[in-house]
Image 1 (cartoon, rainbow, N blue to C red):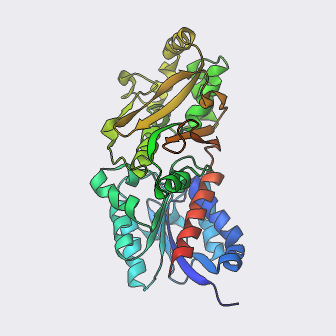
Image 2 (cartoon, one colour):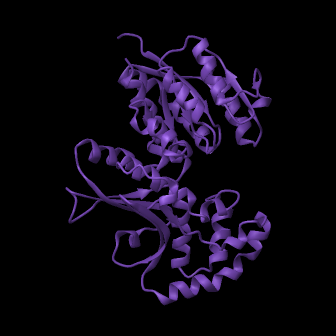
Image 3 (cartoon, rainbow, N blue to C red):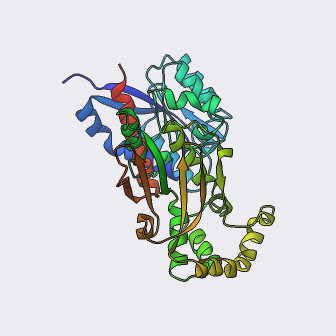
Length: 361
């Protein structure tokens, strides 16, 4: 058997998803090399403050130590041999100068400003695997290239463990016409809606979601609906509707006057919203679900009371996406299942890396 083809990885982001990705990469390395003849090996690992680089590949011991540092809430700057202040673009240029070919840039951050590094990577003939939604949800003139390149994959950006992106690609690539997309696209807000359905006050439901780590440190990052809007925008663009975020109406789950509060103040004032949510749910039939609804001319992301729709069956952090198309007109093509969790999100990133590596010449 010939030696496996070595594919360097430049990994940006060592948070929960990044660490789960590293663990899965180590666990599956030998099996992937045997099954597909490709060996994925990290040559660079970076957080927002520091980076580890080795053109020959970072050792398993180095990767393990780095993951332990990050799990303890510390920076890669404390790792032996770390380089300070390197940006993602710096790492891409370093890889090019080192003569590395067929590299894959893996972005598991939620950071703004990654576009220059990603565009440069593609210009060098590298590939990109994204868990980060922001580059795909920026202005269309900058994001268009990511959607049109065969060397960019982003299954983890919508639905995490559900094959939402691959299913939509299949529909589009086989000539189907997408008419409408609807879904519950947030595991966090799904959990929150389940608690509301069970009769829990809104403030207690948000507090519980925060204590379980389901929300971002500032729950408004979830409650604003913007994360769902970015996912909806990604689906719309992949469907062939190159719209902007301004064409998706977003209805947050808190009033605008609470935007400027500190996190502590926001949490303290949440109980005053309890009666509003109770009144809303009492006035309408059905169960609460935070849904995205998208068509060719735009969309809306908002709390809805649903009855007969499949979304009513969801519990906890489950996601659901339905594609109404020319072929699937009477009964939409629907995916349901786990839509959150670092392990399944990391697995989607790893699968993208495998597919990109297998496509390399």
